[in-house]
Image (cartoon, rainbow, N blue to C red; front, side):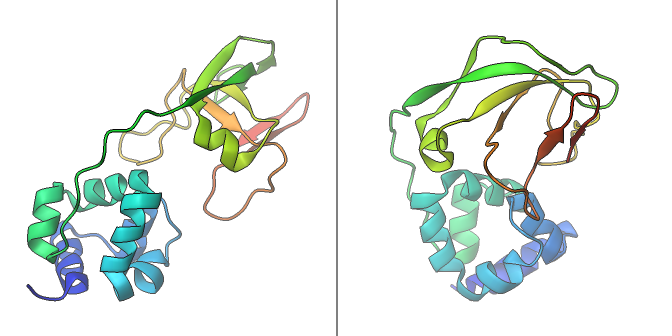
Length: 176
């Protein structure tokens, strides 16, 4: 089998995807493929299999390959995911956030279940908002947020490039 990085580059070319666009589709910064993934495809894939399986799923979706096709083209065997029980935690839903022409308001709306891993990773104080409106939804984007979806907010984290964030005041709300 040839060079896995070359197989990925060839596939990106076939799909008409730049490395930057591919990186964003996988949920990473635009320079991720060139700087972190392609120099060590096998190491990155092994890491994703055990630490970021959702990233590996997005990678396969972006490449439009099944796990079997990925293994055949790159020579890197993908182990089937082990069935595991995901522990869930409840996060309070504290209101509704506007997406475009929707409405925003604060009102306790119960709870939404999220994987316990999210609470462990981002700490206490998480809350959820229900999305009202459709300005954050586009079927062509990998991270579109449809109307009625819930977004989980970690209020103690500062926004950073490549992440989703929400901020608001009593009269104005923005999301990006």
